[in-house]
Image 1: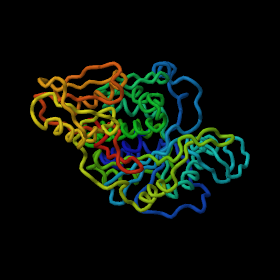
Image 2 (image 1 turned 45 degrees about the horizontal axis):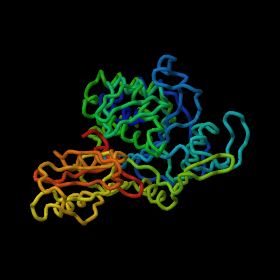
Image 3 (image 1 turned 135 degrees about the horizontal axis):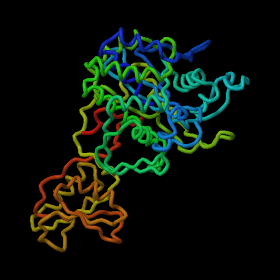
Image 4 (image 1 turned 90 degrees about the horizontal axis):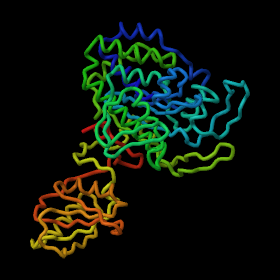
Length: 451
């Protein structure tokens, strides 16, 4: 679902008008802006509403079985993102809107039953089932006050075929990812995913307690990896590959009538030097993770003030977070701020315990600030001891102490112990894999792609 806009825009820089025009004629067109009134003011830059729909009925039975796409299609939006392309064409900002967000529709006619509806509450992804692209656009504009310039709709089929046409996309994870529903099963490390595997990766919701929010972060990480794949493999400069990718993408998407050849070519030329560092990703800040609504169920309630600041940045064509150089820290599963550490000096070197404690604290670990002397003062190799229940934290701590050894100690509890040995030289900076900046959790593309 998150492939088509970036590939279409980037690929347009490759050959230009002639090839895109041929494929452009086959795009399925919709009119999501028909008869819309009282719309938000036009801002600088371009805002595209990127919608991922189910569409599993278009995938073969064999592929549905292989990638566990069982069940009936929901005829709703699986993914909703606002993609903002800056006026100077030097930055792309992507804001994910949770599909279970509490929303209120404007008055409208149900596009299936023809029934006239008054404004009412629903989950954001249900707006599509009730009123199609038009109600989806109207609902998003009402919620964000961001004027949508273009609409792009992608389904499972387009997603899988595009990834395969690109030769796969590389994803990195610092911990195993296993979902019994989608059957995603990725060990920690680096993986080159084909189209079906990539679909499992972006659809999985049962890897941890964060559910849909962590799924959106994986979708953002995938989109950044896709941009990296397109730019690093020089697809844009290979006319034949460009043609194949463009045909794959544009032959199975739906777009508004105004999103045509000229837009693609102009944006493509402007963004021909695009890279992952030019992109930034955020998710709407949430005030309540479980907001029950009668007749709707449990929804996500946006934080009104924080969300308004985020959408104001889009309206004013500003970056979502201040620019900074990407961190060189090693990515770990558990954030150091969540790990409690007691340091002990296992040598006769005066002050070593204090030095290790200060270094760990400086990189974010929650140390006691009161190092002790170990019972054994002849430790040569730094030792980490931990309760087996905190093994993930122990791995993160070990990454900060290269060369150390670890030992599980039943009953030690939540505080990990570092016994500094004579081999200690330094602490390596680490950060959580999903560490992000600001109240909207902003990350740039180069921070979420493989090192």
